[in-house]
Amino acid sequence: MSKLPSHAAYVIIGAGIHGLSTAMHLAERLRVCGETIGANGTRIVVVDKSGVGAGASGIACGVVRNNYYQPAMRELMAHCVSVWERDPQAYSYHAVGYMQISPEVMREQVGTIYEQQKAIGYDSDFIEGERESLDHMKTLFSDWQARNITSVLHEKRGGYANNLAAVRGLAKKAAALDVEIVTGVEVTGFRSDSGSSAITSIDTNAGTIDCEQIVVGVGPWINTIWNLLELPKTISVKGRDGKLHDGVRMWRYMALQEGTLGVDPDFLKTNDGRMPPVLHVDTDAPLRSDRDGKLITDSLWGIYYKPDFHFNGVQGGAMPAVVEPDADAVRVDPYGPKSPEFVVTDNFADMWTSALAFCQKRFEGRHGVYRQEPSGGIGCFTPDSFPVFDRFRENVYVIADSNHGFKMIGVGELVAHELLGGSSDLLEPFRFSRYAQGKLHPVSNSPFPWS
Image (cartoon, rainbow, N blue to C red; front, side, top):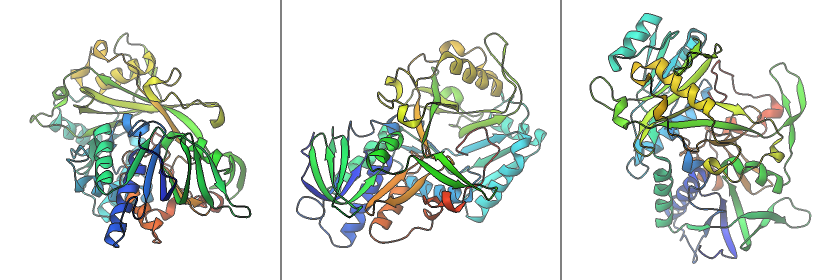
């Protein structure tokens, strides 16, 4: 662990996608302005209580997509995809594309996504009709057999990135610009001068660091930092009914459901021998177990999957599970696969492998090669399940991604611009004030809370 300095112009909490992207882009912009970065100039310090990529970024599925029903999310993600495309090798980014395969209840909304993708110049194809959708999928996979599908949105951009490799690529770029990354440093409190809400210093387990500006990019640990900043646990939200709803919890947790099928990643190649797009399938067809034929669900359900050489198999997931306790009662640590509470169970394995078999014949009878290893994690969600990017306590910039984080590598560039006095139209729809003002994002028919 490097020594924590006594002062820095910018302290960034969290060495994941957001923290490192912000640090890198901030250093780039300051250098362009002629400033020296580092101990002899403008000091940018990233602190993390564990290490680079030790949190959600390091276990992320890594999917990069534009498939959002919300216009603001689509526009923001188009920017983020462009950042992934700038240096795919450094970010271990695979631009294989992305497919949203949907039932009739979602067709109209997915068609709206397509029309608005066209409007912003984001390349995609849209196929409508049950027969047309099946024929299109069979041009890619001869064994395609998913039912109750009436539309396919095929995004030509997007794909996925290898989680830890991407984060380490960002860390390397940031360090090359003289950003200091100090690990093993846990934030324990914030200090401010009497009569001012601005934070003047941060208390940590490694000492106190004075600072001028702070960026919080801690993923599922946001509730902890939020409490240390003495920000509200509950808020008022102006609903779509025009009424103000008081006492709404600011943060809630959901358990992520992901796993890996232990097959060669080449197992999922297309008819012409290419690596396929990331596949996301939603349907209202009944799902039965591929093991014993028992009904798993007859409600709308969805999965996503992709071949992945980092995971060494076919990796993906399904809808998250609700974590019922209040956010303050949820134990985030130990995180991810190390958690005794929030790893996936055999119920997920049965559902996901059965869903794979529902989609493609090649997966029938493959439950036995599901990799029985701890997987999953938890995400911390806002009241509407979409991010908050805003300033609090005068000089604290909060990046609260509401579990959309990994794919949003470009948010750090926009935050860096705002830290230096600029304003981002792409971030404006995600201000905290939207809740009281009723400027909420539209809700899709997807079974996933983040689409």
